[in-house]
Length: 268
Image (tube, rainbow, N blue to C red; front, side, top):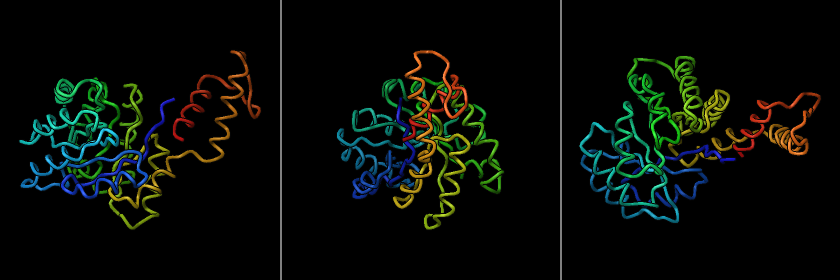
């Protein structure tokens, strides 16, 4: 079973002194940000700083600048040159699968790509984007998405779109998507509510903007003890049945039940 990463922590690309702290935060993945966190006049210096800090022993993801910017090609080339120091590339405002295909042609098909769906066009093309070779999972840029569509609210207003990303990811056969950030850094209750909602909707993780958010996100996306114990009973019963029908807790264990148990343990 593939262990799913739940917490993806952003760290500004122009603050290399923070990279080690981010990597030690307990986050399942760290995203060094060359896009929103870096002003236009600092882009080149930040890229150079990131290139110098890459370490194959502790690879990180990099959020590059968008395909419609002047920094896009240089960012992609830096990721190619960094090699094993890069765990994956996050692509902001992903709208066209051709852009992702071009990135894959430069860095290789084995480099995981994480497209951010944060515009109406990106959502419209989400299935084609998800099916593009190299795409590991989608991420929801919920804040920019609200702005692009003129949506006021992050609750039921975005329910359809969140569910659409979960559905598209499943149909495309990629990992469950990542939900967007919770901007209220000091509101633990809000973060927990947002994370649990995303978990219930079928998301596999969540983007974080501060190390303080990591522990809560990890806990919310980890199955409960009851779920874990149930899943282990299911797999144990199935493994000992040698293909025969079996029941657990008075209920028949069929393929969907077995897949559900496997999915639960993959989140541990």
